[in-house]
Amino acid sequence: MEKNIPYKTYLDENEMPKAWYNVRADMKNKPAPLLDPQTHEPMTAEQLSAVFCRELVEQELNDTDPFIPIPQEIIEFYKMYRPSPLVRAYCLEKALDTPAKIYYKFEGNNTSGSHKLNSAIVQAYYAKKQGLNGVTTETGAGQWGTALSMACAYFGLDCKVFMVKVSYEQKPFRREVMRTYGASVTPSPSETTNVGRKILAEHPGTTGSLGCAISEAVEVAVGTEGYRYVLGSVLNQVLLHQSVIGLETKTAFEKIGEKPDIIIGCAGGGSNLGGLISPFMGEKLRGENDYRFIAVEPASCPSLTRGRYAYDFCDTGMVCPLAKMYTLGSGFIPSANHAGGLRYHGMSSTLSQLYDDKLMEAVSVEQTKVFEAAQQFARIEGILPAPESSHAIRVAIDEALKCKETGEEKTILFGLTGTGYFDMVAYQKFNDGEMTDYIPTDEDLAKGFAGLPKM
Image (cartoon, rainbow, N blue to C red; front, top):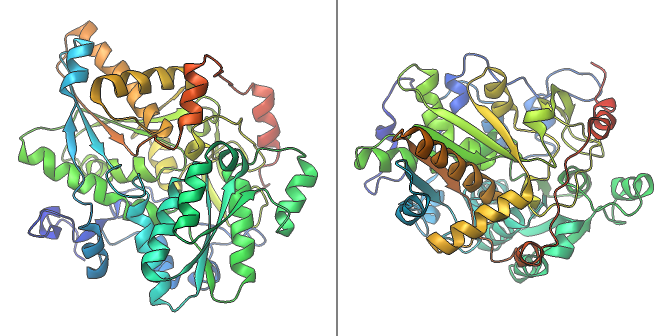
């Protein structure tokens, strides 16, 4: 599609996007390519197609087209729960006594309970279109696994999920939702794969990580006829699909004659943050508008704020391609904190490049402060937020209180990516005063950095 066509051209009669927005098309400095771990040469479409669906590979490698049409079957599915609401937090503003306006884009109003369904249904669609039997994946908190199992049930595909072990144990009901939709769920690392057994041998008693689970899911996908691997975050294709969040948000703000000054999102691998900010970032890249973007990550897994910008494996087992990203090292095993969806050692290559270009900021926050904000939001606004989303709530509240101090009337937007009704073990720990904060030392991080591939 041509550049410089107003994005409204790609809205339907219900003001829903008819095309995803590809922020990479407007980036002067493109994200670095994925590299073959053996040759250190850029991965070809043919190589990637052994792991991913063909059309998803095309989207992964597309750095030029600003808009990519959404298949009509996906648009019809989106209509079940989209557009999602943009809500002004009047009660929170009043409680904080702030002159700031606070808005949140709520993605928890679908059966899977989070924004993850926006990409899950797309990846299942392309797998079905390719004639595959099923897909494999990993999941942290379980939101992605839940969304993908729902999408696979819709298209009649088998779904094999490797769930980070600590989340598998902490969130049994999320696990059972996946099984209800027909998915098989295995705690990771497991004894069912070669890489799982290797990780367990090297790290006895490990609680797992998203990097571990990715390794197992990729091994099963590559070794099983008629299967491909799908991922719920990090990849360019996922940020592309999630751009429906930002496109709808931009449309809603224009309808009410408002414009956000500060846009905040939690950051683990980058899917919701990238989706929320991408059309606004596009305006900034084109010089049309300016915004302040803030990525919020857990202090226990601070890839942007304390990581290194380097090529690294996307998985703990070192079987995936190398990606240039802000990383703590693929061997870094984060603490068993309760924001399972943010428990990943690296950040999206696209967001890493934007951060390195000083186009967005990043902060890390301790989980006790995150749950204080979650509880405050639940009591005032009436929605029990997911622990991941609550990182964005924490910083949104902090920014609103700064406005109270300065008297500035800023408009703050944050992404409320999902609900926390399956995260009650975490809330119980907080309510019982048993939740603690873990911040890795420089020595802890050095161990992960030591394992970065020599380029």
